[in-house]
Image (cartoon, rainbow, N blue to C red):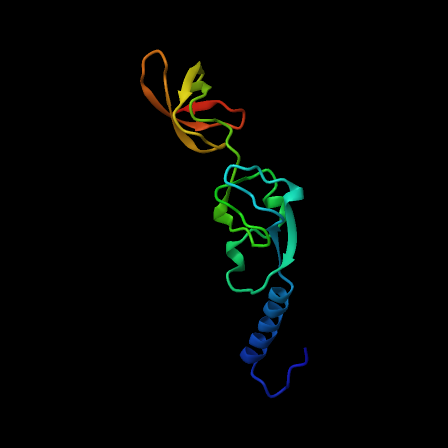
Length: 152
């Protein structure tokens, strides 16, 4: 881009930045669903296609690459040919509501393990409720990547 010498430094910088932003937005390509994906479906690579973004406005609200979608679960129905909103996907649940989960309580060098009945489904890092089947006490714990629940 050639900048006239009479132009001020601020104006020149603005033109330079505006030109690069417009070039990036024009080349924006977003992943879209190839077919209807229903809530609870796990997204596979063959379900996704790349499509040029029709308009640059709001592109940040949508998933921008296929890798960020593969293995995730749809929260709502994803229509074919439509960009996929980031809020419409979630991590796959590791713990399912109504299933028993290993429960681990750790304090210093003491570790207590048991089982609990999950009252909610959850992904790794989420805090969910579970019930001790022996005492009926409801416990809040963090879902671990191995599928156990760490009680606090």
